[in-house]
View 1 (cartoon, rainbow, N blue to C red):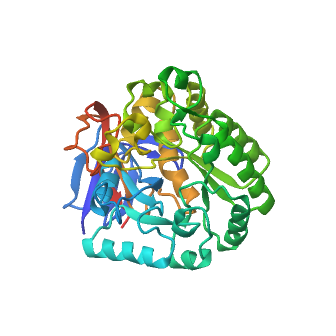
View 2 (cartoon, rainbow, N blue to C red):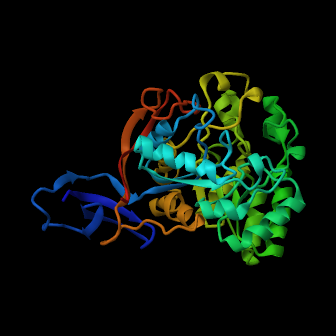
View 3 (tube, rainbow, N blue to C red):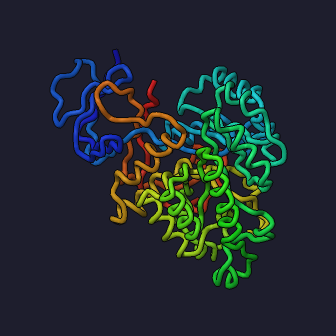
Amino acid sequence: MPSELLQCVRVLDPVSNTDRLADVLIVDGVIKTVEENIRDYPSHTEVQDCTGLILGPGLVDLYSHSGEPGFEDRETLDSLMQAAIAGGFTRLALLPDTHPAIDQPAGLDWFRSQLRQRQLSAPKLYHWGALTIGAQGQQMIELAELAEAGIVGFADGHPISNGQLLRRILEYGQPLGKPIALWCCDRDLTGNGVVREGSESIRLGLPGSPAIAETAPLAAVLECVAYSGTPVHIMRVSTARSVELIEFAKARGIPITASTTWMHLLLDITAVQSYDPSLRLDPPLGNPTDQMALIRGVREGILDAIAIDHSPFTYEEKTVAFAEAPRGAIGLELALPLLWQALVTSGEWFALSLWRCLSTNPALCLQQPPGAIAPGQLAELTLFDPQYLWKVTPQTLKSRSTNTPWLGQEIIGRVVKIWNGS
């Protein structure tokens, strides 16, 4: 019977809202004891001095992208899973925009067979089912059929601009009881914009995308949700005005949750002065006022969760002019250490607040029970060293792609180990 004793580890448990030093005994994949000084443990126990390390529930990613099937040169299932493990994620929810898209049960069957054949068991992999055929936003799929196949929820990962289609989706989706995630973006208003519109976009000489490209469709979605009563998750919130609209909607009792991505909390448009194509994101990085509003929104619970939106692209795809680069960056291995340094080490956030938004709250948005650190609970845990110094290189990254603005830089903090709760 395998057992491990983690001594003098800092335990962060958002479920019980506790942050304390303790010993944690894990036996057969189950948390046996959490006490200040455990003296009674099996003789064959592996004992580890965890002074200075952080132990929290496993991280949960709300939405990211898989290269496979269709774009294996960007990311394979194997490299994706290894990147998630290296980043501390024990649950990973993938968007359906693979090739082919997950818009019918056969797509889920393929993933399940691949996981069995390759014996990939960590992290636990979940899939969003497409709302429309090919995730193209034109024709609704058979929602009930996909729901029965075992998807975690519905999300195209792309904007749905047809208001009548959106209303039908909310009406048909309501009795299925699955999360529905929507990205509010008006491509007509975005135009050829590649950065957030404002004085900085003018200085950079890059076409700007106005904030109303997000807030106008968001206001429409909120009205549709208020009318239908169907709960919705708002993805990729990136503007200060969006935070205001969501705060007002929640105060009215409209059934929504919301998330922003980790890079929108860390950076704003001023970072684009490097013209690094890895900073070409969608939605684009906000103006400084947007970033401040997002940080406040997450800290105060207006925005429920932080998503990674891991988006791998090859070196050749990203090594082009900024405005021509595909949108997105990797992040599974980088989000926790960089957010910890920027928000926790700086004293801006409590450690529990960050961990809650990366673990407990994303699980709740997926309508899943969150992990907890208590006797009798399955050990779904992440052990993190906040002082570990390492350099981000193709050799140190597990992801097959390296499209990140932190490539070649030294960062502080790295995951030591995960337990996947099985």
